[in-house]
Amino acid sequence: MRFSHSYNDLLREDYFEAQPGEYDGIPPVLQLVTEWIPRAAISADRQAVVGALAFGRWVSGLFEVDSPVSVQVASAIRDFVPALELEFSGVALRPKSPHRSSAKLIVDPLLVHEQVESTDSCGRFGEREYRLRIHPNGESSGCMMVSDTFEVASNAYFFDSPEDDMRSLEAWYPFLAVAVLMSTEYEVGRILVPANLCDNSKAWRDCEGLLKSVDIALQGA
Image (cartoon, one colour):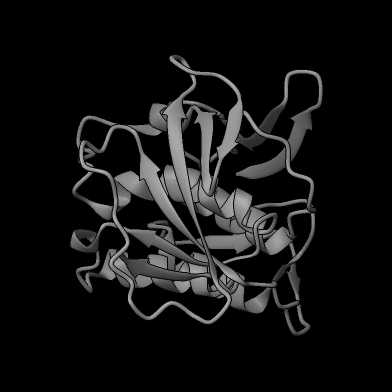
């Protein structure tokens, strides 16, 4: 599966697109659309992590992004996606570049009836807290920052399948993909999700390792 990242200044939309190959499955939608334009460049490593989160369950065979990914990210994606065989179009045999991190981001999809509350009493000195509220883009449009809450419309909801349940971490993957897209802009070093998702299952450990490979900690709120 080939991934590309682009945006439309006129519509103020960000597009993360998947192009399935011969051995890939077909996802419900081929674009993760976020109605927001990044001002900071998103690294190839983080783009690859977005691709794995949004489309990983349909990937089989080749995993291709525009630039080579680091060894650490390639290894984490292999652990994360369910495909038995996975090859990368390019792996950079060099130390990965660190990402700046001075903030935490609480992911808060609107389809979760109870707002995710941070009970984090061990915040790092000088660490800023943001909340990301993701709206279905069929019902809302655009984006808005109110205080430290970022309201943004996205089609992340369209990746849902009948077996998905917001009590399982897997259902959160498209929303985590949106969070990773925005993480560079806001220097996010920690992403918080409901504590009940933090169950030390293989899915949690693999997702935790995936985000850690791009310098983001995944934690329960």
